Amino acid sequence: GPAAVDRRFCRERPDSGHGADGANANGSRPSMRRYDSRMQRNLPIAVIGAGLGGLVAALALAREGFERVDVYERSPALAEVGAGLTISPNSSRALLALGLGPGLEQRADEPPGGMTRHWKTARILMRSVRGQALRDQYGAPYLFIHRADLLDLLVEACAAMVIWTRPSAIE
Image 1 (cartoon, rainbow, N blue to C red):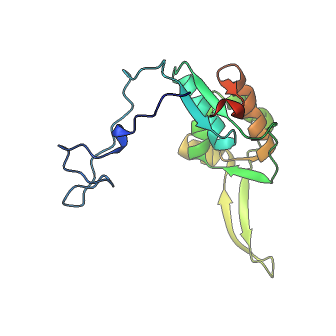
Image 2 (cartoon, rainbow, N blue to C red):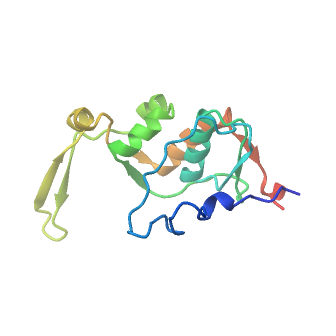
């Protein structure tokens, strides 16, 4: 069977002076340390769930050089239903960093602007600038994309980098 998971890193270090929630006696929290490039990249990593979040996590780990990323999914086929998604510049920047730029250009839409209307009278309450102005301000686009299109894009990007495993492998 699979090896037991060592969860010691999740617990408080005896000499740290920090509680289980990360706060010290004064209530302050230590700064988060950046990823340690010395981390062993040959350790297997399991990602549970092949939804949008699971596939983004798997792709990010594989692109960081981790050699074995297994995605476990209960469903026999990936089928995402739902409506469109709004992807803010913070999120699109992350997706672009994962190499999804060409796919987003083909499948997503970058609206030039937006507006909010009153629910009953349809009077315009607010207009917002999007498109190139927002891209210039934040360094990444504001996008609309259908959930199924984003899932397809992630599946394609992960296909060559991620090892897919059937749920029967989990025991």
